Length: 279
Length: 279
Image 1 (spheres, helix red, strand yellow):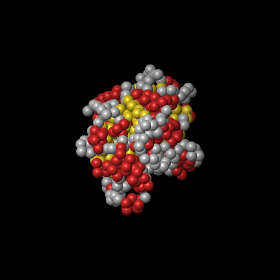
Image 2 (image 1 turned 45 degrees about the vertical axis):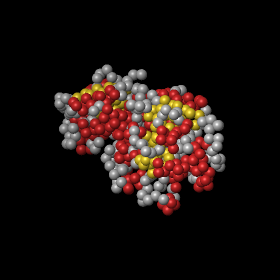
Image 3 (image 1 turned 90 degrees about the horizontal axis):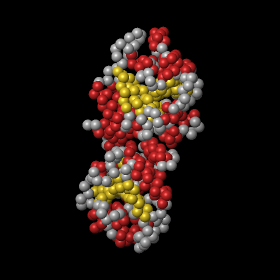
């Protein structure tokens, strides 16, 4: 089987949850080889090397790509936001030209089932594969957005799990389009990369089932209700591939309100045990 | 490191949870070699062989011991109870004479951290190592037993996790003592093997910390309360070695009320995935 390309873009504060996510990925996909592309700007060498050892221990390969100062020199300046917000959207230009597909994963995800079927999804004609988070009404749009008071989760593709058709992206995604969009929408951007993704490329994303590939770990009751009870905990454990601890309530910060938080904590303990092998 | 001897005694109905327990044991102890002694009377050969492959896949060894009709021929007959109730207490006579230590585990346990420290506990002077389940009052005895209405969990050693000093047991534990005790207490035996264990050998059991080695998965709030909040979910995930889904509410039967049920379901999914490798 060909290796699976995973893309992560993060700063050094997110290395601990990244290790947990990777542990879950490796453990639930023991027969796969992963090439983990890590786009970053300033993660210290020691931490990169430790991550390399960690991936190598599972027969996978970490390929860090440090983004230099010169990159995105023309990007519009945005208060509070760094250039790192562009890494995900412009990954097609940063990743090696000979890779044509990658799966972007947020570090606050957990992979609890085999990922091959998702990775092999046919993206012909699309730039991305992504998920809209299910809501109780199923209606998307601004009204609902306000009513639920959860801007992040309604009617928009969530940018936490993105299957990337890099070949098609290289033909269509242009830095200047993104920079122009940001300049024109500066004041409206709440979740910048997700807003840009939806604003510019929403119609070019192949919809994937969020209950399988980007399950919002805080909305168990919603999934259960809209599936008439079918998608209970047993169903999730056997079918859901990617749990996403999106939003502010992270499982590594107390108190955690997700019923899946305990799984994250177990994988965190497992990830830390691996770390001790390298001492 | 010497192999760790694990003892299980069960009938074929408990093979599915046994696989889950073993999966958790193997996964959280990747550097250990286990010799799994399975005392049974009538598990079909096909199922034994499938379990053998399953253990071999993890570099461990299944050693099934079928107990013949002739064994325990003198045991007193008890309504509803089979001779299998004696396997755990008389394991020292059934297991090979050259093994001196074993860890008995109920199939409704989950091993979520390394087990070596427990196995290496010094049992000199004792027949068993075992746990009394913590209660809110900390008082044991019949009054409390009635008040809490949970005979199983109060003031008695729970027989679900037992570290066995087989050498000492071979000198002290006698079939005839056990058979006599059963004859004399027939009508009082509620949880027969546990009652016999406590009645005959209660003073010969080295107490172990149940929050580490026999954590009652349905009593999270009790553990948290009596530790003044220290033993929260994070503590359990990083310290508890054995979770025990004791009592009637099993995680494989819906609905499950333990907050740890989700871990059991995840391991059940993992165990089933291994099974498919053998098809």
